[in-house]
Structure formats: structure tokens, C-alpha cells
Image (cartoon, rainbow, N blue to C red):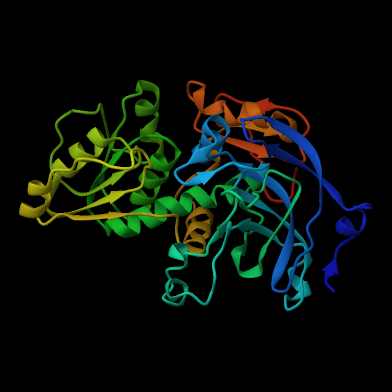
Length: 364
């Protein structure tokens, strides 16, 4: 048994609309059963879903590494919504809460989870990673502790973008940035700009963004960059380097820009293998590490948003309905696009070229 709201009671036959990716790249909007929350879970009516590069990659190529779309899959892992029902063991008082979804279900018994590194759990079930369905639908379930309450001052869009923001937080934590530090970031896409914003929020005073696209490069200043350079430009030594490009040449250049004992953090996913300057890494005692998703980041993300230290709404450049999912997934190819958001309850496309209007709190 579980508690419900009138919203869920009114679902009638208990079906919902979902955007479904098929092997070969086809997208259809289908009726799917509304999931029921199990013990310790909540049912969330989805309000906003950010489009990630991985979603577009699955549509265009059908796979990412060993994860292959072999059966119909619901994409989307950057999501927010409102709790409309709770499973056993979850307080009924959570019904009606607006939440940002941390889209992962680790096995709490693994050694990684017990050490607090649940993002490295070998039995992780992650939204929109085959065969696990994601959030491009009207309702999803998630463990109650992975549905993070957000205040009404945080928009639906910003609540959804806590997910990519969490990648930025994880990267900046690995880079050990603090007051007065300097950092070079390769790539001015959504993750690179998240890293720039977080770097500024933690007190970095010199934030160098390397980006080949002139439009993205010029826009980086709005999100924290103090220097915008073309790849290959000379750079004064920095304390840390964060790669958000996945490009080998960018990684090599970033490592070369580090001061002795600097830290290099690899976030971007590109080639499976790279040739790196081992002598530089050894002789300068460079610390080189990677970032795989995140753990224990949502409280920090929500605090940063509510404090006004960064602006996620300004990163939204297109809003789409569920029927326009393909257009949303292709939006990254539009000049000037930063982040597309899909609103499952919005029937029409509302693409914008700038910041557009944002949806605050419950006002839809």
C-alpha cells in the first residue's frame, strides 16, 4: 500500500505518455503504465528534463561504450518534478514536495556504497543507461533519499539542471579549488560552463576557458570565465585543469599548463585511449584523476542555486514538449544553443535563442 494525491487518483487507467527511443534511432511517443513506488520509493510527476549529450549520442549512435540500445528505452536523466505518491516506509508528508531527482539507484551493500562512493557502485542502476528507463515521461519512481526537496524560489528548469551541476561540483572538488586559485577548463559546453560557475562560486579568481567555437568562447564570460582562449594559445601556469571536452589535444595542453603539483581532472568523454605526456606528469608530480558522475552533491547544488552564486536558468536556450523530443535532442547542433529542456506536460515547442523566460516554483 502507498499514499497518493488526487493527481495520481485521477490517472484513471494509470497510463502515461513517454518518449521512447528504439534501436536504430527512431523516437515515438507511447502510452506506458504509470509505475508504482516500491518500499522506500516515491512517485514523481515529471515537470522538466534537461537534454544531455549522452541522450543525443544514444539517439544518433545507439550506444555509449559498452552500453547499447538493444530494446526500447526512455531517455533523460536530468529531471525534476513533484512527489505525488510514496511507497511504504516513506512519510506521507513528502507528498506535494517539489524535488530534483538524483537519477541513480546504487546497491547499498557494496563496499563502494558503504564508503560513500556510491557513484562507483558496480551494480548501479542509472536513468537512461540501457536497459534502465529514464525520465522523458510523465511519471518516474526513485528512492526517497534520491528525491531532493527544492524551494519554490528554484525553477523547474534549474531543479532539473542540478544533475549536470553535480558533475561540475564533483569535478571542482577533485580539482581541490579554493579561494584565489586558478583553473583552466577545456570546453565551453554545458559541463564546462557548469565547472566555470562552480569554480567562481568556490573562490577561484582566474578561470581560463579554452574553446574552439567563437560563439561559445565569447559567451563563457557570463558564466564565470575570466579569460577565453582558442585551443593552442599560450597559458600562464594554473593550479588545476578540468577537461570537459574529451579531446586528446585539449588534455595534453591542459596538463602542460599546470604548475608543479597541479591537479588534472578528466570529465569529458571522448576517445577510450589517449597518449599523455608521462614525463611532464612525473617530473611535475601532477595529480591526474577522472570523474564518474557524482556522489553527495545535491545539497551543495541546491545551496549554490538558492544563494544566487550561480545561474542555471540563464543556460536554458530552448524549451520543448514531449512530442518535440527529437528537436530537443538535435538542439545541440543549433548555433548558440547551451541547454535544451523538455517539459513533458507542455504540448508545443517553445525554443528560444537566449535565456528566454523561466518557470519559477509551481507556476507553470
